[in-house]
Amino acid sequence: MASPATPPPHGRPTPPPVEPKAIRACLTPDVAAEFDREWDVVLDTARREQDLEPVQRLLRKWRHFAYAELTSPGSYFRVLATAAHTLATGQPPAGSISGEEMDELIRRRLGR
Image (cartoon, rainbow, N blue to C red):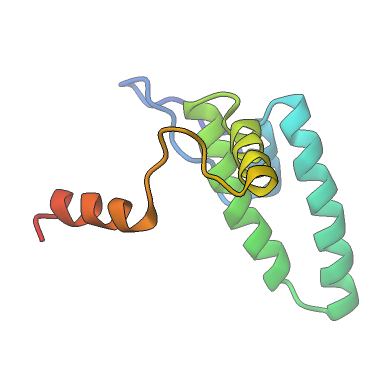
């Protein structure tokens, strides 16, 4: 059985293994309930289609959410709130930058 992500000596958590129990152990009860709902749907799909790729995709996706929750608790629901705002208003949240601006920041940081 995998253990949840544990903080290394310097205090920063590490991402959990790509395993359901390890990922779920990193989540608050509310976020774990979201994981559980998706897990059930994906397992049904995998069983019906006899294909494990949807399960692997779900675990990779939730590994990122689990790590985000470890490093910034509440991040999952903040992402959902931001998406809901953007969908409802058609506008990005205040303080957001465009994709082009993000690309430029990345290029600058990489020295390109």
